[in-house]
Length: 319
Image (cartoon, rainbow, N blue to C red; front, side, top):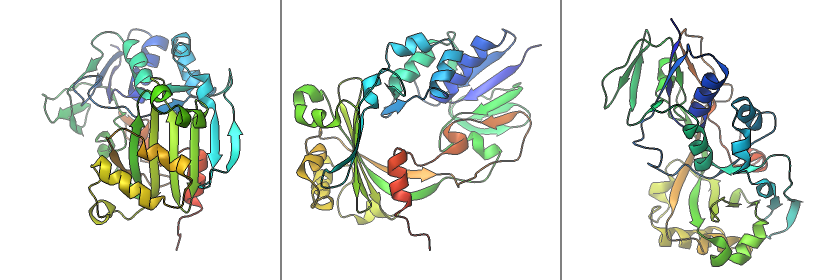
Protein backbone atom coordinates (compact mmCIF):
# COMPACT_ATOMS: atom_id res chain seq x y z
CA UNK A 1 0.00 0.00 0.00
CA UNK A 2 1.33 3.45 -0.93
CA UNK A 3 1.86 6.46 1.28
CA UNK A 4 -1.05 8.75 2.08
CA UNK A 5 0.09 12.33 2.62
CA UNK A 6 -1.87 15.38 3.78
CA UNK A 7 -0.54 18.88 3.20
CA UNK A 8 -2.14 21.71 5.15
CA UNK A 9 -2.16 24.88 3.06
CA UNK A 10 -2.33 25.50 -0.70
CA UNK A 11 0.19 28.33 -0.80
CA UNK A 12 3.39 28.19 -2.88
CA UNK A 13 5.15 25.91 -0.35
CA UNK A 14 2.31 23.41 -0.09
CA UNK A 15 1.58 23.31 -3.82
CA UNK A 16 5.28 23.01 -4.70
CA UNK A 17 5.74 20.11 -2.30
CA UNK A 18 2.73 18.33 -3.78
CA UNK A 19 3.96 18.92 -7.32
CA UNK A 20 7.46 17.63 -6.53
CA UNK A 21 6.11 14.50 -4.89
CA UNK A 22 3.76 13.76 -7.77
CA UNK A 23 6.30 14.63 -10.46
CA UNK A 24 9.36 12.95 -9.01
CA UNK A 25 7.87 10.03 -7.11
CA UNK A 26 5.79 7.09 -8.31
CA UNK A 27 2.03 6.92 -8.31
CA UNK A 28 1.99 5.00 -5.02
CA UNK A 29 1.82 8.35 -3.18
CA UNK A 30 -1.66 9.77 -2.58
CA UNK A 31 -1.55 13.50 -1.83
CA UNK A 32 -4.34 15.75 -0.60
CA UNK A 33 -3.96 19.47 0.16
CA UNK A 34 -6.41 20.98 2.65
CA UNK A 35 -6.84 24.75 2.31
CA UNK A 36 -8.92 27.02 4.57
CA UNK A 37 -9.68 29.53 1.79
CA UNK A 38 -12.79 28.99 -0.32
CA UNK A 39 -11.00 29.24 -3.68
CA UNK A 40 -7.70 30.31 -5.19
CA UNK A 41 -8.80 33.94 -5.61
CA UNK A 42 -10.32 34.28 -2.14
CA UNK A 43 -7.83 36.92 -0.96
CA UNK A 44 -4.78 38.88 -2.04
CA UNK A 45 -1.57 36.85 -2.09
CA UNK A 46 0.78 39.78 -1.55
CA UNK A 47 3.61 41.19 -3.63
CA UNK A 48 6.44 39.80 -5.70
CA UNK A 49 9.14 37.18 -5.10
CA UNK A 50 12.67 36.87 -6.45
CA UNK A 51 13.57 33.25 -7.13
CA UNK A 52 17.23 32.28 -6.75
CA UNK A 53 19.04 29.86 -9.02
CA UNK A 54 19.87 27.27 -6.35
CA UNK A 55 16.60 27.43 -4.42
CA UNK A 56 13.36 28.58 -6.04
CA UNK A 57 14.50 28.08 -9.63
CA UNK A 58 15.99 24.69 -8.80
CA UNK A 59 12.70 23.56 -7.28
CA UNK A 60 10.84 24.64 -10.42
CA UNK A 61 13.29 22.72 -12.60
CA UNK A 62 12.93 19.61 -10.46
CA UNK A 63 9.17 19.97 -10.69
CA UNK A 64 9.26 20.25 -14.49
CA UNK A 65 7.83 23.78 -14.40
CA UNK A 66 10.81 25.95 -15.26
CA UNK A 67 9.75 26.64 -18.86
CA UNK A 68 6.30 27.65 -17.66
CA UNK A 69 7.90 29.88 -15.03
CA UNK A 70 9.91 31.67 -17.74
CA UNK A 71 6.66 32.81 -19.35
CA UNK A 72 5.95 34.90 -16.25
CA UNK A 73 9.45 35.67 -14.92
CA UNK A 74 10.46 39.33 -14.93
CA UNK A 75 14.24 39.51 -15.15
CA UNK A 76 14.10 43.31 -15.31
CA UNK A 77 12.38 43.15 -11.92
CA UNK A 78 15.75 42.33 -10.38
CA UNK A 79 16.68 46.02 -10.71
CA UNK A 80 17.02 47.63 -7.30
CA UNK A 81 17.93 51.00 -5.81
CA UNK A 82 18.86 51.58 -2.17
CA UNK A 83 18.52 55.14 -0.93
CA UNK A 84 18.15 57.30 2.16
CA UNK A 85 15.41 59.80 3.01
CA UNK A 86 17.10 62.49 0.92
CA UNK A 87 16.82 60.16 -2.10
CA UNK A 88 20.56 59.75 -2.21
CA UNK A 89 21.01 56.46 -4.04
CA UNK A 90 23.81 54.41 -2.52
CA UNK A 91 23.29 51.30 -4.63
CA UNK A 92 21.71 50.96 -8.07
CA UNK A 93 21.59 47.59 -9.80
CA UNK A 94 20.06 47.08 -13.23
CA UNK A 95 17.95 44.09 -14.20
CA UNK A 96 19.55 41.28 -16.18
CA UNK A 97 18.64 38.29 -18.32
CA UNK A 98 19.93 35.89 -15.67
CA UNK A 99 20.04 35.82 -11.89
CA UNK A 100 17.00 36.22 -9.64
CA UNK A 101 13.92 37.15 -11.67
CA UNK A 102 10.75 38.33 -9.97
CA UNK A 103 7.35 36.69 -10.19
CA UNK A 104 4.13 37.87 -8.59
CA UNK A 105 3.00 35.64 -5.72
CA UNK A 106 -0.51 35.02 -7.11
CA UNK A 107 0.95 34.09 -10.51
CA UNK A 108 3.38 31.61 -8.94
CA UNK A 109 0.63 30.08 -6.84
CA UNK A 110 -1.66 29.75 -9.87
CA UNK A 111 1.13 28.12 -11.88
CA UNK A 112 1.78 25.56 -9.15
CA UNK A 113 -1.89 24.89 -8.48
CA UNK A 114 -2.68 24.26 -12.14
CA UNK A 115 0.18 21.74 -12.33
CA UNK A 116 -1.55 19.47 -9.80
CA UNK A 117 -4.02 16.72 -10.67
CA UNK A 118 -7.62 17.86 -10.48
CA UNK A 119 -9.07 17.40 -7.02
CA UNK A 120 -5.73 17.55 -5.19
CA UNK A 121 -6.77 20.67 -3.28
CA UNK A 122 -9.76 20.50 -0.95
CA UNK A 123 -10.88 24.12 -0.51
CA UNK A 124 -12.78 25.46 2.49
CA UNK A 125 -11.10 23.05 4.93
CA UNK A 126 -9.90 25.06 7.92
CA UNK A 127 -7.76 22.94 10.21
CA UNK A 128 -8.64 22.97 13.89
CA UNK A 129 -6.09 20.47 15.20
CA UNK A 130 -4.16 17.30 14.46
CA UNK A 131 -4.92 14.13 16.37
CA UNK A 132 -2.52 11.21 16.31
CA UNK A 133 -2.26 8.95 14.51
CA UNK A 134 -2.78 10.72 11.20
CA UNK A 135 -6.14 12.34 11.87
CA UNK A 136 -7.16 15.88 10.94
CA UNK A 137 -9.99 17.77 12.62
CA UNK A 138 -11.44 20.77 10.79
CA UNK A 139 -13.44 23.74 12.01
CA UNK A 140 -16.00 23.45 9.23
CA UNK A 141 -15.68 19.95 7.76
CA UNK A 142 -15.80 16.32 8.97
CA UNK A 143 -12.51 14.79 10.20
CA UNK A 144 -10.17 13.03 7.78
CA UNK A 145 -7.86 10.22 8.88
CA UNK A 146 -5.48 7.51 7.77
CA UNK A 147 -2.55 9.74 6.77
CA UNK A 148 1.00 8.41 6.99
CA UNK A 149 2.44 11.94 6.89
CA UNK A 150 0.95 15.35 7.63
CA UNK A 151 2.88 18.41 6.44
CA UNK A 152 1.95 21.80 7.87
CA UNK A 153 2.35 24.41 5.13
CA UNK A 154 -0.27 26.70 6.62
CA UNK A 155 1.78 29.84 7.13
CA UNK A 156 2.94 31.93 10.05
CA UNK A 157 -0.09 31.20 12.24
CA UNK A 158 0.07 27.49 11.49
CA UNK A 159 -2.37 25.30 13.37
CA UNK A 160 -0.38 22.26 12.35
CA UNK A 161 2.58 23.69 14.30
CA UNK A 162 0.52 23.45 17.49
CA UNK A 163 0.88 19.67 17.36
CA UNK A 164 4.67 19.95 17.49
CA UNK A 165 5.29 23.01 19.64
CA UNK A 166 3.64 25.48 22.00
CA UNK A 167 5.79 28.31 20.61
CA UNK A 168 3.82 31.14 19.01
CA UNK A 169 5.03 33.94 16.72
CA UNK A 170 5.86 37.16 18.54
CA UNK A 171 5.59 40.77 17.39
CA UNK A 172 8.83 41.93 15.78
CA UNK A 173 8.43 45.58 16.72
CA UNK A 174 7.97 46.61 13.08
CA UNK A 175 4.65 47.71 11.59
CA UNK A 176 3.43 49.75 8.68
CA UNK A 177 1.00 50.21 5.83
CA UNK A 178 0.57 48.73 2.36
CA UNK A 179 -0.74 50.69 -0.62
CA UNK A 180 -1.01 50.13 -4.36
CA UNK A 181 -0.80 52.28 -7.48
CA UNK A 182 -2.66 50.46 -10.29
CA UNK A 183 -1.63 50.98 -13.92
CA UNK A 184 1.44 52.97 -12.88
CA UNK A 185 2.67 53.57 -16.45
CA UNK A 186 -0.34 55.79 -17.09
CA UNK A 187 -1.19 56.93 -13.58
CA UNK A 188 2.28 57.80 -12.22
CA UNK A 189 4.94 57.38 -14.93
CA UNK A 190 7.40 59.49 -12.92
CA UNK A 191 7.15 57.22 -9.89
CA UNK A 192 7.41 54.13 -12.08
CA UNK A 193 10.59 55.51 -13.68
CA UNK A 194 12.16 55.97 -10.23
CA UNK A 195 11.93 52.23 -9.63
CA UNK A 196 13.55 51.34 -12.97
CA UNK A 197 10.88 48.61 -13.32
CA UNK A 198 12.27 46.91 -10.24
CA UNK A 199 12.37 47.90 -6.56
CA UNK A 200 13.21 51.09 -4.70
CA UNK A 201 14.01 50.82 -0.99
CA UNK A 202 14.63 53.95 1.06
CA UNK A 203 15.33 54.07 4.79
CA UNK A 204 16.47 56.50 7.46
CA UNK A 205 15.70 57.14 11.12
CA UNK A 206 14.29 53.62 11.60
CA UNK A 207 11.71 54.28 8.89
CA UNK A 208 11.32 52.66 5.50
CA UNK A 209 9.52 53.31 2.20
CA UNK A 210 9.45 50.64 -0.49
CA UNK A 211 8.08 50.60 -4.04
CA UNK A 212 8.06 47.44 -6.15
CA UNK A 213 6.88 46.88 -9.71
CA UNK A 214 4.32 44.11 -10.15
CA UNK A 215 3.69 41.99 -13.21
CA UNK A 216 0.22 43.49 -13.68
CA UNK A 217 1.68 46.98 -14.15
CA UNK A 218 0.92 48.21 -10.64
CA UNK A 219 3.31 49.50 -7.98
CA UNK A 220 3.21 47.83 -4.57
CA UNK A 221 3.94 50.46 -1.92
CA UNK A 222 4.76 49.88 1.74
CA UNK A 223 5.94 51.92 4.69
CA UNK A 224 7.52 50.45 7.80
CA UNK A 225 8.83 51.71 11.12
CA UNK A 226 9.44 50.59 14.67
CA UNK A 227 6.21 50.82 16.64
CA UNK A 228 4.84 49.43 19.92
CA UNK A 229 2.47 46.48 19.74
CA UNK A 230 -0.37 48.81 20.75
CA UNK A 231 0.26 51.31 17.95
CA UNK A 232 -3.08 50.77 16.20
CA UNK A 233 -4.96 51.97 19.28
CA UNK A 234 -2.52 54.75 20.15
CA UNK A 235 -1.55 56.28 16.79
CA UNK A 236 -4.47 58.74 16.75
CA UNK A 237 -6.00 57.80 13.40
CA UNK A 238 -8.03 55.00 11.84
CA UNK A 239 -5.43 52.65 10.35
CA UNK A 240 -8.01 51.33 7.88
CA UNK A 241 -8.87 54.81 6.56
CA UNK A 242 -6.73 55.62 3.51
CA UNK A 243 -7.12 59.41 3.78
CA UNK A 244 -6.21 59.44 7.46
CA UNK A 245 -3.28 57.09 6.87
CA UNK A 246 -1.92 59.23 4.03
CA UNK A 247 -2.06 62.28 6.29
CA UNK A 248 -0.20 60.30 8.95
CA UNK A 249 2.47 59.40 6.37
CA UNK A 250 2.92 63.11 5.60
CA UNK A 251 3.62 63.69 9.28
CA UNK A 252 5.81 60.60 9.75
CA UNK A 253 7.92 61.38 6.68
CA UNK A 254 7.78 65.17 6.88
CA UNK A 255 11.55 65.58 6.41
CA UNK A 256 11.82 63.02 3.57
CA UNK A 257 12.32 63.84 -0.08
CA UNK A 258 8.88 64.58 -1.64
CA UNK A 259 9.66 62.16 -4.49
CA UNK A 260 9.65 59.31 -1.96
CA UNK A 261 6.65 60.47 0.06
CA UNK A 262 4.71 60.78 -3.20
CA UNK A 263 4.42 57.00 -3.38
CA UNK A 264 2.10 57.07 -0.36
CA UNK A 265 0.13 60.12 -1.46
CA UNK A 266 -0.59 59.07 -5.03
CA UNK A 267 -1.61 55.52 -4.19
CA UNK A 268 -5.23 54.49 -4.53
CA UNK A 269 -7.53 55.13 -1.57
CA UNK A 270 -7.14 51.69 -0.05
CA UNK A 271 -4.70 50.78 2.69
CA UNK A 272 -3.84 47.67 4.68
CA UNK A 273 -2.16 48.03 8.10
CA UNK A 274 0.42 45.36 8.78
CA UNK A 275 2.26 44.09 11.83
CA UNK A 276 5.26 41.84 11.27
CA UNK A 277 5.54 38.74 13.41
CA UNK A 278 8.31 36.18 13.67
CA UNK A 279 9.22 32.92 15.33
CA UNK A 280 12.16 33.00 17.75
CA UNK A 281 15.56 32.78 16.09
CA UNK A 282 16.62 29.14 16.12
CA UNK A 283 13.08 27.83 16.49
CA UNK A 284 12.78 24.06 16.10
CA UNK A 285 10.81 21.13 17.39
CA UNK A 286 11.36 17.61 18.64
CA UNK A 287 10.88 14.97 15.97
CA UNK A 288 7.38 13.49 15.92
CA UNK A 289 6.75 10.63 13.57
CA UNK A 290 4.20 11.48 10.87
CA UNK A 291 4.09 15.28 11.23
CA UNK A 292 6.42 18.03 9.98
CA UNK A 293 6.37 21.65 8.81
CA UNK A 294 7.49 23.62 5.76
CA UNK A 295 7.59 27.29 4.75
CA UNK A 296 6.47 30.03 7.14
CA UNK A 297 4.95 27.41 9.40
CA UNK A 298 8.52 26.28 10.13
CA UNK A 299 10.55 29.48 9.90
CA UNK A 300 8.42 32.64 9.98
CA UNK A 301 10.72 35.65 9.80
CA UNK A 302 10.58 39.38 9.16
CA UNK A 303 10.92 39.82 5.40
CA UNK A 304 11.59 43.34 4.21
CA UNK A 305 14.42 42.42 1.89
CA UNK A 306 17.93 41.60 3.06
CA UNK A 307 19.16 45.20 3.09
CA UNK A 308 16.13 46.48 4.99
CA UNK A 309 16.43 43.70 7.58
CA UNK A 310 20.07 44.61 8.14
CA UNK A 311 19.03 48.22 8.66
CA UNK A 312 16.33 47.46 11.20
CA UNK A 313 18.50 44.98 13.08
CA UNK A 314 21.18 47.62 13.55
CA UNK A 315 18.56 50.00 14.94
CA UNK A 316 16.99 47.67 17.50
CA UNK A 317 17.65 48.32 21.18
CA UNK A 318 19.09 45.11 22.61
CA UNK A 319 19.11 46.09 26.27
